[in-house]
Amino acid sequence: MKGKILGVIGHPIEHSLSPAMHRAALRELGLDYPYDKFDVKPEDLGNFVMGAGENFLGFNVTIPHKVEIIKFLNSLDREAELIGAVNTVKFENNARGFNTDGIGALRALEEAGQPVGGKNILILGAGGAARAISFQLAMEGAQISLCNRTRERAGELAADIDEKLDKSAEILDFPLKEKLDEFDILINTTSVGMFPDTDKSPLSGEILQPDLTVMDIVYNPLETKLLRNARETGCRTIDGIAMLVHQGAESLRIWLNVDAPMEAMKKALLDELG
Ligand code: ATR
Image (cartoon, rainbow, N blue to C red; front, side, top):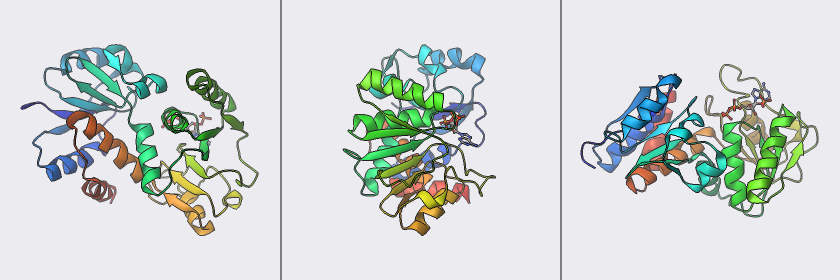
């Protein structure tokens, strides 16, 4: 694979944290691959992907290309196919798409001592991240409930999970009002609480209970209001860096078949976030 490169494509791309994280990993592993960011406009995506196999071992894909890129790939792995979005491309004989967001969330939960099989998991949101996470966790045997501001989108995701995995997902009204007694794990996939709206939370802290594990995929700030409320309630908390590091680690495994240096990656992200 000498001479091949890695990177991340998106538009805009300047704020991506992926280069810092992956460069730290490659340095730690002693692997000599450059990892750069590429600003690819939507109208240029097809040409970019079709010419990329020459130079790239693979790349990460971010907003707005995660769904659109599929039509330019030769094959998809099972998760990407189910989720309908790709965040990692690998070139071997041809271009194959993967989605490591769901597995990143799963590994973050496992790392925190929370295997998901048989657990009742409530997912807030119904966008791309919610899709990846709910499919992955449903495949692992979790019972998924969904709650989204726009109830219809949660309904569409639930119908898709039912159709593709033959599993039912309950829909709860937004905003949540009842105490979350029946759930083991709560995952926020909405952007509520993200900088600069750090005084906002997707739910009232009063409905949390101490047995709940609360994960937020927002990583800026590292401790969102939701996670602060959860910590003060006595919940186990998992911050957004955990999923970010684990989805990156899975991309590295796909490209290079390596065990990623998690600590070095996490440190690079924390440095980058200041
Ligand atoms: P991503 O791909 O990161 O999941 P997305 O597809 O834009 O991003 O989804 C964002 C999610 O955050 C959605 O579930 C959105 O709810 P709607 O479907 O109702 O738009 C949710 N979201 C964003 N801002 C919100 C807010 N102020 N209150 C509640 N939910 C919000």
